[in-house]
Length: 89
Image (cartoon, rainbow, N blue to C red; front, top):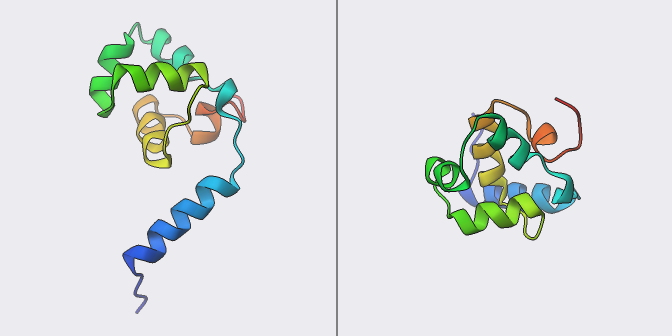
């Protein structure tokens, strides 16, 4: 039986997040949001963040946490690689 400590999970997420070296400046968040005729405010409410954060993510000013990346990818039914512009849809 494998037992994993919650600290190990968070450490893995932390290391993975920084090891990815993703340039989030080319992300597709706005493209996916606009394709569904959705406002920033509505999407932000749907995924549990602020409209200001969502705007900054779309502009590449700040990067969302890996948890928020998962939420966005699940919401738009795409991979994180597609969401951040690493691969095509």
